[in-house]
Length: 203
Image (cartoon, rainbow, N blue to C red):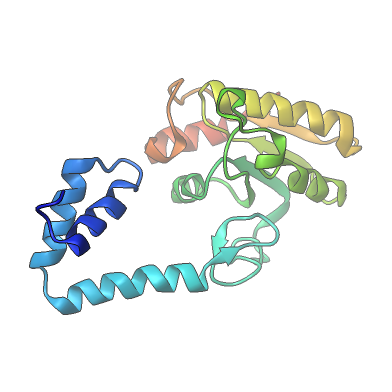
């Protein structure tokens, strides 16, 4: 990119690092920014910095939040005894749109993937066990993605809960398989997610 001005080349390079953004899309985004009014570019830059500076992890569920605990965990109307375990914050948004789940969440921030070097210590399984050991939890809904990594993660957590949590009468369920195998929760429609939550089964 020697023929491109260094600031432009640098912005293309940074856009290309984003998930799902290839070289051509990175170039289009960069030249869109160049053609945009300065105020619009400044608002984008300020929004990015605000997110980085003001958003933290909820100390209970590890979802992204501006206040700790997050609005879901601190809502007295939510059932603290039912925890829905998901892989990523986008899954919380997808499930919340259904309006079916009245409990709280636990965000793992990933799934077990030995092939990619992602193990137990890389996701928030230990923090989930601590929550369960508090004695208030009646049900764990394992809502990991219906793919190889998600299934492996769900089975691993199920075994850990039964072996280490030491909670008698804990119900462990998983989403009903109205969800396509190999898919992601964030892409499922609200009706499918509602049926999956309502039809969850014992592990």
